[in-house]
Structures are given as structure tokens and as C-alpha cells.
Image 1 (cartoon, rainbow, N blue to C red):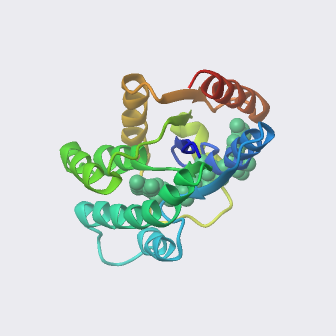
Image 2 (image 1 turned 180 degrees about the vertical axis):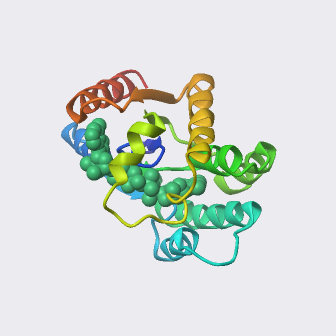
Image 3 (image 1 turned 45 degrees about the vertical axis):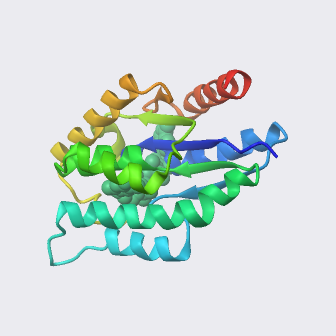
Length: 207
Ligand code: T5A
């Protein structure tokens, strides 16, 4: 049984990750491939509990290193219980957010040293990195209004400057890392989906 492929969908708040995750899974299934969708932080009952802890508004300030360690704790569980077993069973895994989010939010947004995240990734991933990452790029001033009318979590309450730093790291990584395909997600959804479909086809046919 050939190992499945690991696809992540990245981007800032309101970029359209959830909107497009099912679409990506459907494209995979349309090709006759088996696939599952999951998300981070979360993806297992325990990791979803950690997600709730991370997103909850609280009086106590969360130390950036504590936040980073919680994210990697959830990721270790997610890798062990969902991502690796599915890949080993030959299924494609489509995951909303993964370690590129940690570089963007915890290094870019919070100022955690990148080498800390690199070391944690080395420990937790055990060589399991995404095969393809679709980065949905949207200017902050376009993305944030998309969240209007819903309750905001602890991250979504951050200031614009925080999201600008997050985006800057994403853009830098998209330029530097071959597996990351940047898609202009500020356009109409149908256009974004067309580009996602094209990127996925290229990956399936050549990758
Ligand atoms: N986090 C996570 C870290 O700090 N470090 C980490 O390592 C990880 C893994 C929760 C938080 O965790 C933090 C970052 C996050 O703040 P989350 O809930 O998964 O992560 O992510 P969010 O970005 O908060 O999820 P959102 O729901 O806000 O964004 P999505 O999923 O990108 O956007 P989506 O699909 O829900 O769309 C939002 C709205 O926009 C519309 C949709 O219809 C929807 O109404 N929309 C469009 N409108 C117009 N044109 C388009 N092209 C559109 N695409 C979507």
C-alpha cells in the first residue's frame, strides 16, 4: 500500500481555509483516491480539548512559549492518532493549519524564536512534513471583515499589526519553501477554487 499524501491549507483568519478544505477533499476523492479532512489545533478528542484551552479568552496572559508547547502537544497527539495512521493506510490527509501556522503566529505574531519552533518540529514531526501546502493569501484588511458577525476567539481579538506580522511570515515562507503554493484568496471564491484545483492537479500529476 503506497503511503498517502499530506496536504495542508494555510492562511490567516478568514482566508477561506474551512471553506476550501471540503473542496480539496472532494477533488481528491474525484480522482478515486481515499482521503480524510482534519484540522489544527485539534483533530483528536484530546487535541480538541487543547484547542479549546488555546482559543478561550482568559484573564491570565498566556506566555508565548506556553502557547507554542500546547500547540505542539496537540500536534504530537494528532500526528500519532490521525495523521500518521491515515497516511500509512494509504489515505490522503487534508489538514487545515499545521506547523507553518506556528511559524506565522508564534514566531511572527508572538516573537517566539524560530529555532525553538524548528527544534520542536524536529522532535514532534519525526520527518512527517506536508507534501503540499496551499497558502491562501489575503490582505488583513480584506480578511478581517469576513469575520464580522461572529464571536471572536483569543487570536481573532489581536490587533491588525499582529496579523500583519503573521502574514509577513507566511509570505516569506511561501517564497522560500518549495512545497508551499501561494494562492491569491482575496478574489471571488470560484476563482480561488479554480486555482486550488489547478495546483492540486499539478501536484497529483507531477508529485
Ligand atoms: N493557531 C493555530 C496558532 O496560533 N498556531 C498554530 O500552530 C495553529 C495550528 C484557530 C487559531 O489557532 C491559531 C491561529 C488561529 O487563530 P482556526 O479556527 O482553524 O485556528 O483558524 P481561523 O483562521 O480562525 O479560522 P477562520 O474560520 O477564521 O478562517 P478560515 O477557515 O480561513 O475562513 P472560512 O473558510 O471560515 O471563511 C470565513 C468567511 O469568509 C468567507 C466564508 O464564506 C466565511 O464566511 N469567504 C469568502 N468570502 C469572499 N471571498 C472568498 N474568496 C471567501 N473565502 C471565504
